[in-house]
Image 1 (cartoon, rainbow, N blue to C red):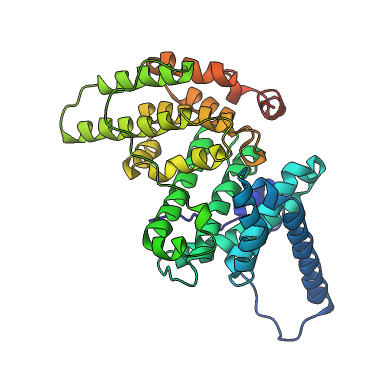
Image 2 (cartoon, rainbow, N blue to C red; image 1 turned 30 degrees about the vertical axis):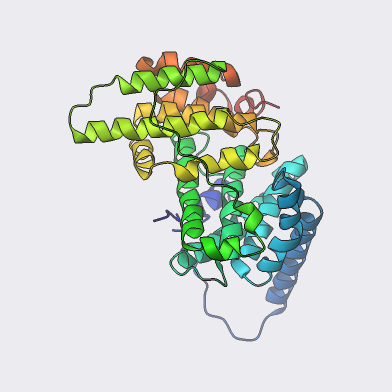
Length: 369
């Protein structure tokens, strides 16, 4: 249902940061705490208080551009978090992620990176399990966390703390996992819609988007929408030899139409960020399967979603993610798709050599402001 990726959760990071793994199997110990464990416990409490303070002062305000939703993140979500530890851990993790964006010196702290990872994995473990037991009591906390975990994952891609995102396949894998996590949000919304509509987080739901009609895209609008229409025509013209090929083309075209709807969003709308990041909730699961297979048409379609993320790059959690997506796709697809990658690369000023450049150049010169 949702890929959790919880096996040995932070070992990639421990290895990369040359740190002992925080998730090593605990050894049996006496029930009485030693001075060392008491000191560690006090340090943990202080870190948690520090992160909750940071969330209460700073992070809540960047969770949405809509003043109504901002108030929910400030006043209502913390109330649910104190009743559901997994949501509290989610708030601690997103606060740590935000601080990494907020304070550039903090990026030099391997400890803060690991803290963000630790709370994310602890929260995610509980969240995944509870998706099989959604109740009136926990649905509000689950729904709030489904928003947080996507922001956390996008932030990890933005900050390059997600495993292997210095390589194109790692970026694609990261995006697939984000899309799968968004499916968790859809599960919650479907199963608990009446409870959510009657609850105090109801404004977070927003209206269900209209399903775009299965008609050819108009050859008008912005350069990106015109390029997307050309891509749609090319995919539709591919041979449909048999049911499997026909289903593939239908999946790709439905995904293109959803992404096209994102280009119709007003960049001045306060809901634009939420709407664009929510589009993949409605992606066909077969599209995710095509991405896992590294189907080149599916990858090129993903590049256009990268343009959408680039349009909301002022939100710190997605800063630079569009560039990474487009660069990853450009590195993985063949010459056949070059005409359809021209627009994404021009739009985001992505160097075709992005993944062959030194890491310092990748993280600075090619990340737009």
